[in-house]
Image 1 (cartoon, rainbow, N blue to C red):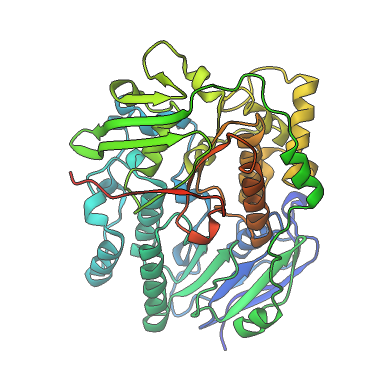
Image 2: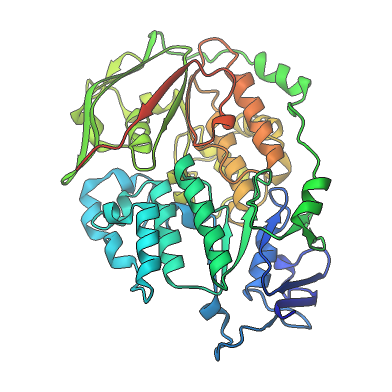
Length: 484
């Protein structure tokens, strides 16, 4: 059978991009892979070696794209990375940009960024699947993380690649769209020559069209095995992974000295948010009281992240709305920092904007000052607090590593520590488990559940996976998409 991609004793020239053992892999015609492994285990290094990004010491990667006359990797292999799910952030992107209407007109429309398609039937299928028609006249900056995922998938699939590599393709998508995407990929691999390689952190629901699994752990690539062999050998994650010692450390933390006194945490009255002709939120009433634990859900583009931007004082339109936070009405004299000091927050937008080449512990420390990046010298006592929380999350050994050199899953863990580091009274977690492996998903869920057992802690959490919600959830809000 034809070897489409072959690596024999592959070792990257640059030591920074090497796995700890030579790579020996063959992607045969008709195979579809899932690449799995823990956060920081080396999955992305393997993929970027497979796609030719890192030159090898001895044997180069061999490709056979026949009968095509072109052997250019870029013509045949398309790779959607984890960060693409939030849109490409460059040096001009900043954290609150999505919410600032005066910056929106300078960004392109979705329709301007989608390529022409030679296959009109495929185009129609993709547009129907992802609701692209509704997005065509939206500025790219206004897309939710889920809509950005749909846009990136559409843009890539319209290019009709020979091999499609996708890093966690289902994250950020609501349940209906995840199911439809699974069915579309299955049809494409059955009816065309497309070969699919999925890089999966959540390895307990590998699609059934996958033929082989490649496991990468501790920067060592294991031989490929069939999906059936992998599922038979996979060890289940324990029902709890947070140690009792760490659990007690969280539960016995002393209360902050500057806690607020109001029994009301969030009060929204007939809140409306519009961008141009597009209505995101319309006439929304919502009350969250101290100690409540809320699950916020809804379709992609329904306004969940916009709602959270109002709570976290990141959206300028909040000043024109009837919003009361911690007993203070917006615009009545309180500063943004008076609000933020009570809130621990993580979101796709935050991950997108955090292109900071700083040691991980400084990223964590920025949560003490509610900044993107660190602009104050960290006090020794603050560093001790940061290390304490990094130890709780099991990432203390990463404290001196550059944030940009961490895997996407490790970055997400660092941003989660940042959300907890000031022991906030309100936790706002927008898709917090994105990109985490099964062990870390269970660990973070344990930490959230334990943290929320403490008196007066309030939680608002967004996820498209019901099983990610902690057991303490006692209230729910479901948002529906507004019309134009």
